[in-house]
Length: 290
Length: 302
Image 1 (spheres, helix red, strand yellow):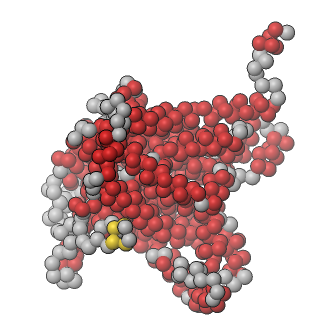
Image 2: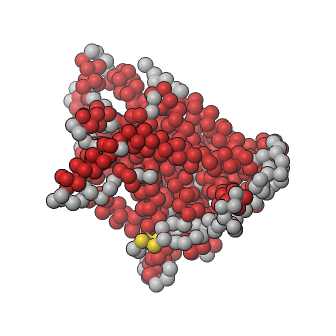
Image 3: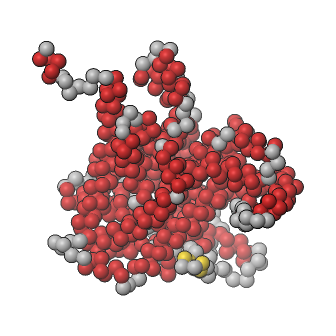
């Protein structure tokens, strides 16, 4: 999709000017086509690519039988009823939603603290770099290594298993994502604005609330959405920490996948999409506090 | 008087008080990251050299299929990350600077909505799209474009580039589908930061799309691209469910091997050794990336 924009002309040193100019002229001539069509085609095909499977799931969830065949031999909402009356699934969904909400808000709060430390903290440079490195560990460490490590540690230390460890694991997992999402915006804030607020008599917390927080708001919303999605879908770490008492939605779905309950799964995933879509829409419509 | 000396540890200058306050704010996230990040890696390492102290677990890594599996995992991580970035650049550019403002947030949210669906389910949807009796093959045979169903799922020709094999079609689609929204979100944050006036200025000075992209857009959004790549790369290389569902039998990835050692063979020390070795290789890769002065400068800005 992107090959159009990166022809291998940039590498040549000697004839670079001429080739570059002619390429630029060529692209200048094509500019209308490229600008009008290229982005539209890319955006539309990306959207289709992202949504096609969702549409397929929704379509297949109407199958009368438990194993759908294409094309469907009928349409029914029966499986939605099955999902909503399946107490195990509903409970797992409630658990996942609660864990996701706590993780999203607390993770964004912790991320804000970490981002502030890294970007603006009045601490020695090596401390700030150390905090950044430590927080970033799950980014550099593949998921399966994190999961195996936490699983072995939980068993050895007697950290135990259950809701508390799952929450801790999820918070740890989303922390680097929220931290660096917020930090990359924090770094662009104009120091002068906060100083101006101080000059006008605002104390630290007031300046933070009235100046910094509204400017950070898009990053905070993105962080909450991001963290919720990460937590809501997290499978491996939960798998290692949940024990027998806690079942989140992904664990429940994994169990259902193993017994081959396909149409049930399709209906369940459409319901999950509707619920999380509503949460996303609500989060996106939040206004920054003033 | 004695009260004052008792409190002599308390910082007296405003700057020192600021340092203490900031250290307090930093403590909470750091403690969490240490307890669940550094400590388990220590346990993992100890486990990998047990019983008491031995290197036999590491010696067992060399001779078998494990180097191939690791190389494949890393290569697929690179390829998928590259595809995600290639798609994310034009899409986020359009979203941040071309899209009418009132649709922007709604479109951004809608692009990231699929990430709210469980990825196990998302992977299974590709099974139904690509299978022998799946959507694509039904359409192709019904319309007469193909005589017989194509081998789209967990197979097809594997394209080999140098030491790396490209992922099979189903595995590639499954990976990109899951991880593209993450890259889109991260890229968008830095694309939004790009001052569009720079693009206009470059255009006014006669730069075409290629030069605008290379000299303005890439340098300005480098941080977002690096962040997006960092976020998805290790997750793709260490993915478990997606290859389990969509990979060809010859495409086993490292997480499947580790999980099998952990759950089926119950050989914890060997699973730990595999994890540590894989982690070491991934970190070397990131280390090479971090040696680049551009990346360091970008990280240094934080």
